[in-house]
Length: 169
Image 1 (cartoon, rainbow, N blue to C red):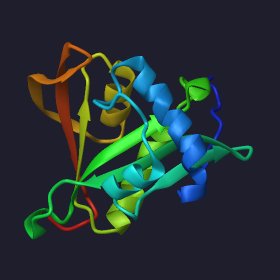
Image 2: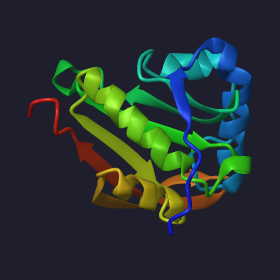
Image 3: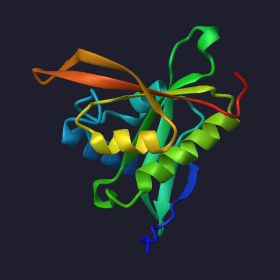
Image 4: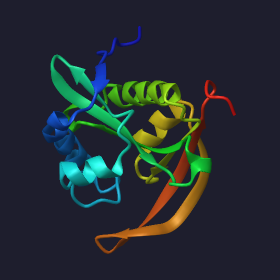
């Protein structure tokens, strides 16, 4: 019999959530294979980089366990429906299915906002994130060898994308 997983409730992220979101982001940074960033930075910096819609937090029993947001792929109008995914889960909540729940919610909300293509750049070592993206309908479209250098270490990345079945293409 399959184990029943806790269900997160989702709501829009606000600036008041930054403390929890920053801590979750720092958990990801600490792994060395969740982001090219080396520090979480400030709310103002994070807020400026991410679209002001489709920012969500996943909560369980009043605690923020995950978050997801989108970054504009390009300022060019032709790419107005293309966005880059960020999805993170608090370290204390890893392995509970919260990444998949959060990404599914982000997909649903992005489609409601007219996004037709979601992209995600994932380090090949981050096998959990790759599995979550595949489970949520993303497909691998490319591999970039030595695309970035962090703390003196070259990093590869795998590019995934998901085309909306709802937003007309």
